[in-house]
Image (cartoon, rainbow, N blue to C red):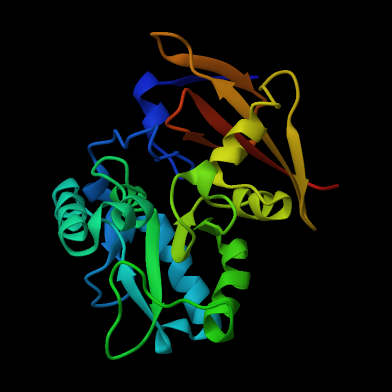
Length: 253
């Protein structure tokens, strides 16, 4: 067995962190990991998210018809957008579509707003219909670790209105699991708490791999320690809400 020691501040880091009205973004080093969403783009994303988005777009020749509208935002930019939306569109609209500074996924570098290429694109609510190239992107996105973050019918859970243009990188196999069960990121983290590490796990099977997903509750006031099997390929993400998600890959015999 191998013993892992996870620093307590790591709960705020990883592709599965939850950022919403109850859980503000806490990391301070996002900019270190940012790259353009595509060549010469001013829209920035976290490095791994950008690489997977590039592969996805290449598979469907997506950049010919789809534009990257907004990716990473600094706290200052989010404040500016929030204030401008209040002035231009009022409180009701802003509360539905624009998160307050420190409560926006855009500050993580893991979220991107996309829109159909047009002479004019609405920065806050770009057009991204459930048809054509946009729907092709939506259907392929799961394979590359992206989910539509704010689906219709889940507004009371996410605290954000339906946004068909807003996609979030959560990685594999999490995007596929969330989609299979119709879960938002909020619901997914609650779902995973049913699978405490060391007791049981959620098993997701692909053609060649068994993937085990479990939840590790953060230790109070100290670094979190737990054991995993030797020679297991694994990843760990904080959830920004009191715990970690452990994902383990093994080959299917």
